[in-house]
Image (cartoon, rainbow, N blue to C red; front, side, top):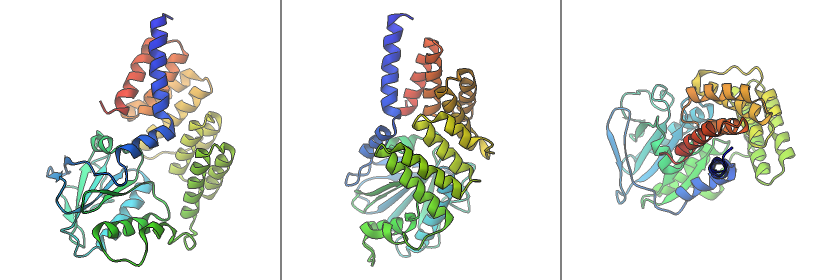
Length: 342
């Protein structure tokens, strides 16, 4: 291999490794939308073609919700938010709501009419954005769904949260009340503890195991994190979404063989779940040195989801391992353009 190719590929992989490490990505998002900063201005068209223009100084609070249309947690978050908005009577003129979804053909879980923005029971209009190219996601640094961002009436970011846990609804409710200046008995900073003891459903226990696993991973306690993942899986062995999340987690810590065992026999629904399954399959096989099988799976994952930077990155790893430096450089470049939204 020519020295210049070695140098270029090294630079690509060094940059991409830093970008795709979970901690680095999370920090990137936090820098882009940080609590206490001004929420960036933006203009987007909703699914009916109507322009929603967010400018500073309008005296309104804003809640921006980012959802994946085929994700169970996003559907649960949407249900919670609809219920919360219905309770905010008299606040229609003081609150803007933007919901960005990745699939314009599957929005019924957030509104009854997918062809026009409509008010809910409280009169608050929900502006649904079909962000199929993830432009608004990129502007806000969104890397996970569901994600909720709330700003106050002075355009200052009050709260940012990714994921849907047992405390999602009470925290969103408390932070919206805070943003709008609505009197409440609960301290917003204590809202996450409201249902910790009473919620003992299987779904809540699964979420707590996953949260614990991620916390242990961040502390470098990998074996303990894996144990928590296994406990979550035992509670809900038939959940496709959970199997994919655990498989992704195992690949992220280099446990490709275990990831394949978790996703074996998983029956996906829709192209988004299928692309995730193929990504995990290709990623795991790449770690195990099964490059031909890995390449096949990753190419199909990219066909189903051409916006997957991780799939392009892992495919670049396969090409590099096979000594196909031209292909590796091109594939790494595609991963970079997706990361930086070019």
